[in-house]
Amino acid sequence: MKVERFSAPKGTRDVLPPESDRWAELVVGFAGQVGRAGYGLLVSPMFEDVGVFARMGEGTDVVRKEMYEFEDRGGRRMALRPEGTASAVRAWVQHRPPLPWKVWYVAPNFRYEAPQAGRYRQHHQLGVELLGVDDPDADVEVIVLLWEFLCSLGLQDLELVVNTMGTPEDRGRYAARLSRWLAERAESLDPEDRQKIDTHPLRVLDSKRPATVAATREAPALVDAVSAESRRRFERVLEGLTGAGVPHRVDPRLVRGLDYYTHTTFEIRSAALDAAQNTLGGGGRYDGLVEALGGPPTPGLGFGCGVERVLLACDREGVFPCPERRLDAFVVDVVDGSAAREITLRLRKAGFSVDRAWGGRSMKSQMRAADRSGARVAVIVGEDEASSGEVTLRDLRSDGGAVQKRIARSELESELGAWIGRSREVG
Image 1 (cartoon, rainbow, N blue to C red):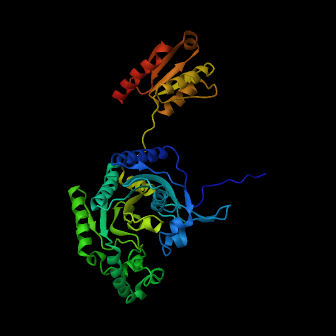
Image 2: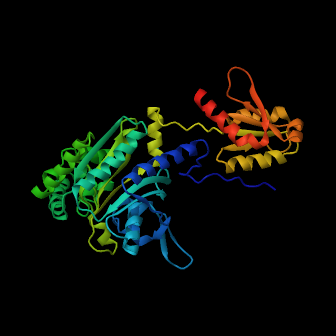
Image 3: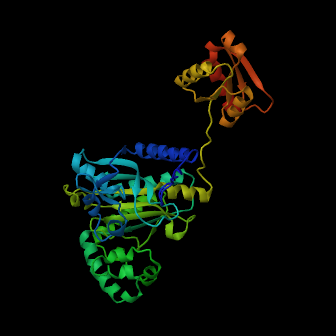
């Protein structure tokens, strides 16, 4: 009988060691940086009531075409999470922790779309959300957090672009003007965008389709249409970025087509990636989203950052490589394996990273395994050592030939610590 072999679904992939070690290091670095700014980890469900994400906008491609929707056994309409912000806001509306509320997350997101460079149907995001603060200096904090995180990885070919959406009133006036301007050029737009002229004109401006991009190159800019108060607020953000030493450029095309977005919007792009897929992360203010999800009027802002795309940019720039996996010790037991079992558990409890061979293999085979493991020291137990209650330590990293020492098993932790320290100094 032929057994069917399975592969990961289209648009997904397995992340194996040592690549997964790099993912872990990325998350640890992000957690440390945002944690120092007062952000705590939020873990939210992988799926929600479809209405949570539908509030992002019925006319968006995410809601209309890309969400993984299903009916559960109780007849409820659910959706796999396509992005992180809506779930975070739903969590605040449900639990009402004190404001300001500062959280970060790392989570898989799901979108049924054609796989792209650094973007899969299951892709992963790091992000932060800050609720309850209307101060434009908070916009600066959030942008600088993302910028400094990406720079900490060694990335240099970065560009920060920013814009302002103004107030809902600013955007309403601008949308009416933009709709009239687009209607005069409707035949030049991509057919997918043409139908949005009357209902969602800002989404036309946000389109990445080549025909639409070319046709709207001279479109009126939202930043020129906002009120004096909105402009002052935006200038405060730009001033803060300059003061933080973060280079930036105002991009009038950077808009969000949803009603709850207000004021600052931003993206960080990588020149090391193709232009169509070069955004590493972005975000902005969404002062109307809490209210849209059933909460009281509450300002909010945040960003999302794609793990796969960030690591792809790192590969292109030759930075943030996979960390080298090194063990402190590898136990070689050529008697019956019982010493290896006892010593590995004992050394791990003492804080050392330790592995061993299995299955009663020969000394030669176990020493090859020790070399492949990258361990600094081999802890060897032969017939003589087993009978005398000793072990032999052998330095696996010495360039000057085998360096080894026989010691009592009771001295193992202290002696190994001294050897590891000496080996680290040499290495």
